[in-house]
Length: 341
Ligand SMILES: *Cc1c(COP(=O)(O)O)cnc(C)c1O
Image 1 (cartoon, rainbow, N blue to C red):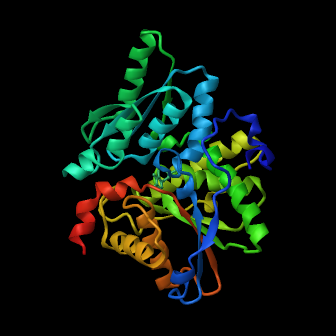
Image 2 (image 1 turned 180 degrees about the horizontal axis):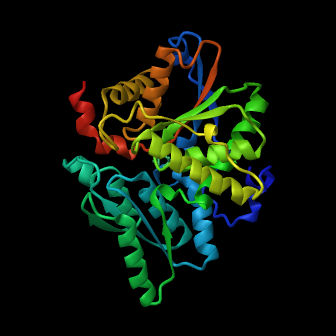
């Protein structure tokens, strides 16, 4: 859809990693249990390069920018089981760039599955060099130092922030907003809300910026915070949304009330399982055969179910839940799912 984008995103360098528009599907069986709320899923888990997930939309613009800057190496940061890091490694392999990942032990899980399985196995297959840092390390500072050292050797290095959520990265989800608007019109299904996880906030920011740049006030976007306190996530997301919309059109801005972050599903913190997450992952898997992940989409879907139960989402409303991928995380969290059976 990129060439026909109403946001004129062809102005920005882009490296192709996607397979075209991802489908929107109703949750046919689950919807019968939801008392009149209709839930649809946007299957961004079906962008499948490198094991798939939402970071590929951002990486099209990030790798595009790296290539435009003539980089030969990409460095990025994340937690030990970062999906963004894994997909950066895959995209770098695809583009013929070297990749280094600065991963911290931010999440208090120390079993072998968490430390060595899941995304870590895949990072190795993609040929990435992994730096293993303690939980309290400043990963971005380490990445910048590493970039300086490599540049001194003559390499050209592109450093990509947490979650790939620079304004250029967020353009990927502004484009997704345009894709959703077009699909909603084709299907004749107007959505009241787009619902998804808010981690580094780039997906949320891009969707909001895209909707406003398209002149839309509905659907509104609800992000469930999974990384830190909701108010900090909201402020950071609003800032990213403003930076993103100014790339699209410098005369536009994002009103504060357009960014809504619900903090009810964070639990004890980033990457720490909650009972509601475990139940949500099991429910969608056993009812629809669809896989959420334990860190992001599982908590967000738990929030959606909670919102239906409490009446925040009402009968007759249509919700579009963004399935963001993250399948390798399920292998890394094997012990969490075993324990709750
Ligand atoms: C990174 C990630 C998210 C969150 O996206 P942000 O743009 O960082 O907020 C959601 N789901 C999965 C599976 C992810 O890997």
